[in-house]
Image (spheres, rainbow, N blue to C red):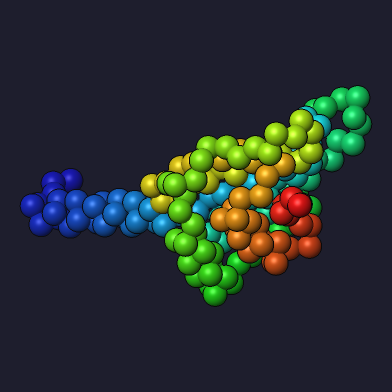
Length: 156
């Protein structure tokens, strides 16, 4: 089959448009995981995307065997309004100014790992027995939409 210049141009234009659409969707994509653990054991992982919130819980309750076995226990599809609210919230958080870690100095307690991939931004922030207010606003957004809450509160 012989293709003329016009056909080749149409095919190349289609490929370029598909490529740009994929790139645009990746630039606006949201992937956030919040892992909560204490005493060296993962208790839960909350995964937030631009479409849904998925709550995973460690189903291994045998403290003698610290193996993590995550099980999906809740899933919440975000409405278009909630998706807009999430984007607005993320735009208000100064991710590039946040430290890589926040620690209170306590040896035990609750630790959180915030892994954030939002467009071109990629950050991992460790929080140990510490309340960081910008991350707290993200947790409040998630907790207000699910039954199985993230334990993240201001420490007195």
